[in-house]
Length: 274
Ligand code: HH2
Image 1 (spheres, rainbow, N blue to C red):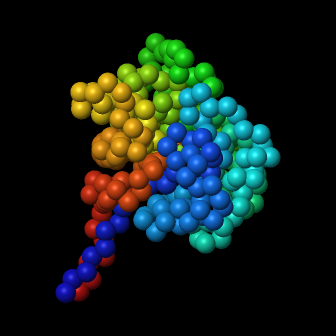
Image 2 (spheres, helix red, strand yellow):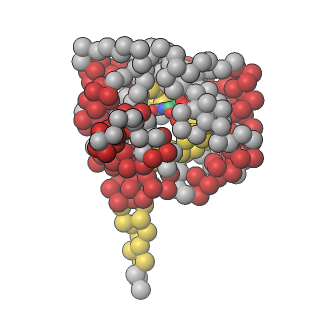
Image 3 (spheres, rainbow, N blue to C red):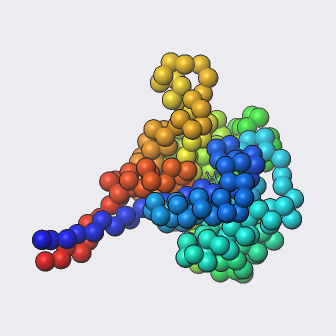
């Protein structure tokens, strides 16, 4: 009997927020043990990376002190990396990036797109994400003349800075929901192929975000956005679209379902043995 293996050519990053207030999984993992168990479960379900964050960057979120972010993040990174999981750290603080790298993280997910020198010094892959403004106020009145061109140009400039600083693996991310209206998010999604064509691997984080709640509510003809735990179809649709556009990794909460979608849209059969 022939045997073949399905290999995914698009990657899945599982979200692990060790925070009390993240918009989707805030407070879900109140202890190190609970967070580690969820990270291991996501790896088991097929997450290629587990992204550990200790500071919410949802709209309106207040900043977290470095000591508190370290306390939340480092033990979880250490245990997951020790178990062989590829760990990314979602932080805007050089000190947290350094401690996470020492604990075994291999990627710096940087929503401030400013830590290229730290990533280079630590030998970490670096995700440069676009954001307009600070989480506390970024959704007050976001404005662009041409959101697609401005986001792309900003990310290309960041990527060049990263390369010049010596980062060997630079990812770019349009930052869905970070200082963007529903229309801005949809324009960025519609033009993903142009971002992919810019020549750097693209990461997309649309999972369970507010704009999906809004679109799903419109589809259901109800007023209030669909609740955060009920946005799977939207997360699946955006991930599938992203893979079809050539996006190389999606950052998601629902790892198993999105991994299945990745296998269908971006799977490759290899190794057919006799
Ligand atoms: N979105 C969030 C956090 N980090 N990183 C990247 N690269 N891209 C994203 O789109 C992105 C991100 C926000 O989502 P989440 O972590 O689920 O929530 P919170 O910020 O409330 O912790």
